[in-house]
Picture 1 (cartoon, rainbow, N blue to C red):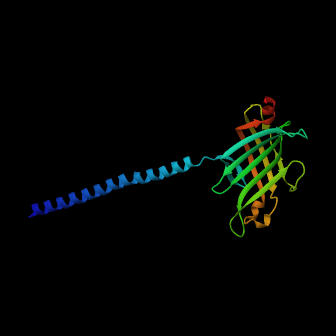
Picture 2 (cartoon, one colour):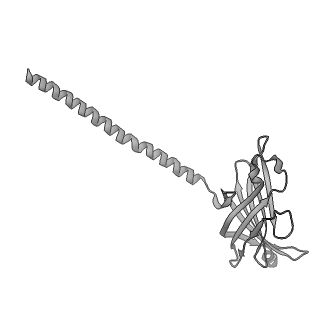
Picture 3 (cartoon, rainbow, N blue to C red):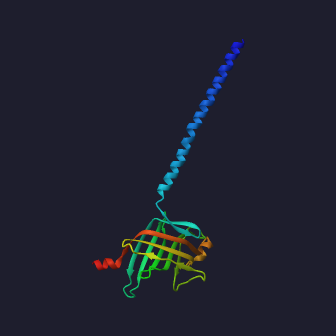
Length: 204
């Protein structure tokens, strides 16, 4: 009788151990599968983002999907200007940061920014900002500095530090009133392709 009881106890223990082992193996196999899916999603998200970081605008990262430059001389004034445009293509519309440099001194002289912002009554609007070294509407504490390097004949590098740019108009329609004045964190760019229109004309 004792032998039969021992045998039944052994069978019960064997079944229990087998069930625990199977459960453990399933858990061990399923967990890596979940982690793999999450990792795959993260990789896909990164590869889908083709933008390049430029600076922070009021503390928020701003990136561009396209950049280009044009250097030219005004026919009447003979003023030489280098304009570099950074464009962020959105699902609907786009945003831009434009940096204007004096083509002779290579100093930053104007900044223009267009951002898509929510309106109070719904939808979005294009908020336009501008800051000039000389003239224009400026706040008392507005400032801008920057330099440009055009020693490479096809690609440029430069810097810009812009503080307190005021929105040009329709600021009362903005949902977020803190965005009526913007500040760009100090930025650096390099390897941006540009065209010198004067040299192209000389070539003709």
